[in-house]
Image (cartoon, rainbow, N blue to C red; front, side):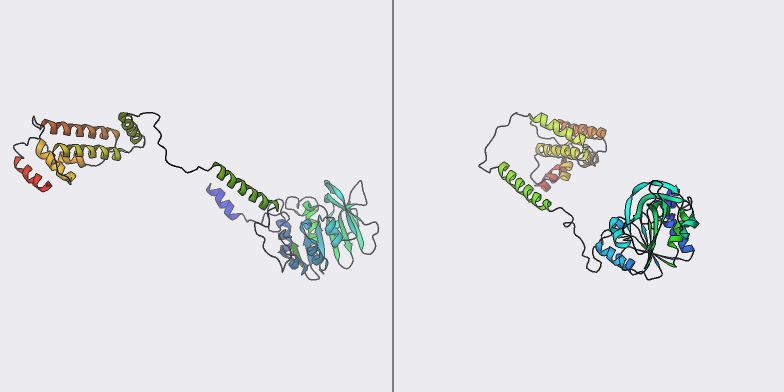
Length: 385
């Protein structure tokens, strides 16, 4: 566990995007970007079309994921003075940046020989080809074009096309040859390094899909991302809920007395309450209820006046029964029991205390004072009155 955590902290992390020069994953391109930097090529990663179009003459502008480009972004790149390298461009990108070419379909990946006179392809030898294929326009005229790594069944189509005119534009139809996963196979590294390292400066452009109009871009709110019908559906649901509430609302009227369906005996209520105490382990609450009931019964038996405190009742009971005051105080006002066994023992002690008070009473039911404590009772009763 500790080793995995250390490895996660030490391993460098990239953005996770495909063909990202900072991504070390198999689909990333950090390996070729690192080699280019080691060879003295300045590699600068940008995500805005304005920064990409600002690449100066004498530099190379690499455009990956060109299908994310809009018309405004393509127009900016078309005005750039740097050499272009396009990776798997679609029809709109080719029409704007390499108008002499047109897409010719997609085939499965394969290893192919250059089959052309381009020095970079000839030096690299066989590479991972296939993918997107391109061919020259039927009415092509003007810039010279070289088709390399042609398809076996259609020699007029190729995976790599180099056009030279006002500037050099290279179209790569197989993006795998630049990725970390396939860079070490065949001549992929050699071709990628020669195409991207022709100049001392390389601008690596990863288009931002949220770029609308740099300079006048306004942030989108979550409501802008919702379909237009969401507001109408929400309003209809609110109206439906309100109608249902009015329909099912209770009409307030006069109170009507209803007889109880059954008669519950007091003993059943008491037993149910005791089960609830036991289920919730409320021993303190149960003990307090028992002690309060016994204190009231003892105060009534002793004819104690109103306002008599529990401590005074303890002293009266001690005076009548002759039991030690500490034992009576612990029974009536002691701490809460810590277990069910202690709670049952407390109930027995309270019942025994009531019986002791009854035994100390005379035939008329009035408590009889013992000889040892007879002189303390008048003073106690005076203090209660």
